[in-house]
Image 1 (cartoon, rainbow, N blue to C red):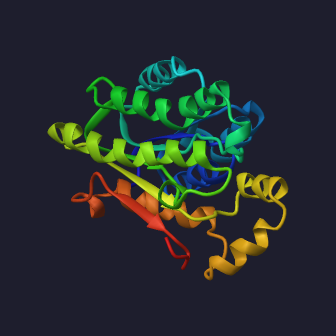
Image 2 (image 1 turned 30 degrees about the vertical axis):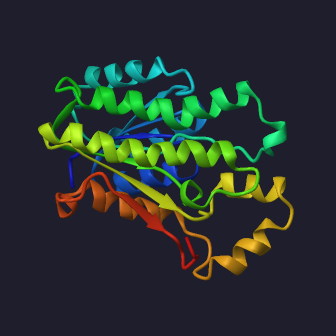
Image 3 (image 1 turned 90 degrees about the vertical axis):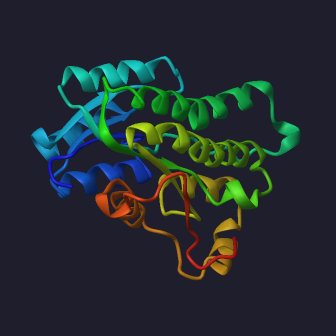
Length: 243
């Protein structure tokens, strides 16, 4: 995997940041994107010419093409993409709105559709490239206050299965990772918003909180030649929980 060109979205926090650090340490060339310029600058200082960065908000879906054009300007034809950008939304159904629905659909689902559309082009990706999208076990189990979030992640799962069939003509693979609770700022946000949920998680997730690096290691496998026969799959990381 050394010297591969990998695009990582959502690289300024949580799983995305863990991905950027992991792939740089493996000797890959990373293009990192996120909304926090300060964090991107920090990553650039830490990893030097192994990492290029671009601050961008993917909730504006038209920015996705700007991102791919930036990759092209760097003369980095992509070997892999890990799409980690996303938001959670702990929102009771009675409090939901059209605006909230549009916001979460745009960043959690529409951005993946646009990324995959552009990745299908020979302008941006190498033959045999691979895409990894972040889903969630909430896409299977649902949950109180998670109607919108769960629905967007379920959409990711079915999109991956369908897109894999179309991308196969260029030998491009696409898979998703669906973890239980991962120790990220998003997890701690959920704990603040739903008192007592940390106790419930500890009781239902016997292997404990998933570490972001473990998710990055699974993504590494899915991008590698070792996974060359795997596409259209949703890989569940359940940490011992019933899903």
